[in-house]
Image (cartoon, rainbow, N blue to C red):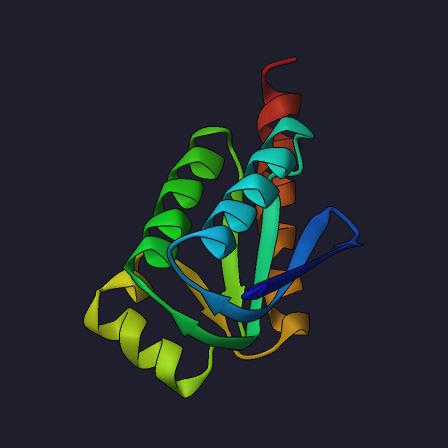
Length: 129
């Protein structure tokens, strides 16, 4: 039984991962880890996780989000979250993860928020040329 479906799509410089199902110990966490690792290897470091279809996330799923966030951040990228269900929002509030991730209600606002990151990166590259 597959617990998690991951659909990858590109919107400009941002890679959107639409997650659907349960993120928990085992296959789901492994597939999420592989998806993040693949994006990092491809240098797709602006990642938006659409969590509207996630029905459950356990501690290993949260751990994967945190470790992936650190990896992407250390490479100069960002992971942002969009469309948290009420249950996920409560869980992330209790675990203080809402203080780590930028969270948006809709995809349009989330995508606009990445523009500032892209501009900062371009400016810093121009500055050091």
